[in-house]
Image (cartoon, rainbow, N blue to C red; front, side):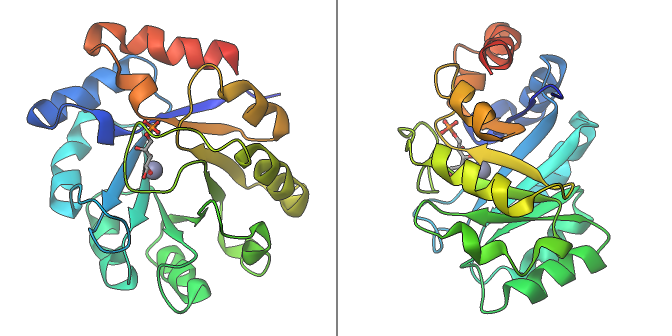
Length: 218
Ligand code: DX5
Ligand code: ZN
């Protein structure tokens, strides 16, 4: 199989040194840069918005994998596209018309993803498969880094894999990924793993070994 894609979440970076942190995690071997945007409404935490992301864009040329935890999300899609997102992922619950949100992302020339919360049925993506290049399976309830992995995510990855068949759609898992939880996820069909606390723990001197440890165990 293809090597697993590691997408460190910069939510776990040192925000006081944000640009340097993005550069450091890129140089440490990140495949994608996972950008967590939280609105304090859809999720019980606030992170940062499109202007901050735009300021980070020059610090890495890797794919910016933007995870929008915003509701309603439609009014913000264009701002994130213009700020340098490569892929924009939205939650099933982020507005009244998921299909329309995904059409809008495609119309902006960006890759589109759908995010499934732990309680959201995998079947909720079956009518939008032609509009997306990724499904993101949440293995925590969104809002914070460093939460405990919900093991049922492994079953949901397998269900997603069965549903997408041989379509070219990534399956990414987000939340509580570390060298212990990575292996069963990849065995079930995940090909991309987000890691926040496990990637950034210990500071910049440890980023390369943190990423390598997840890659090795997956
Ligand atoms: C949670 C975010 C995740 C989170 C991952 O709402 O979407 O991307 O930052 O952090 P860890 O890997 O620490 O669970
Ligand atoms: Zn995320």
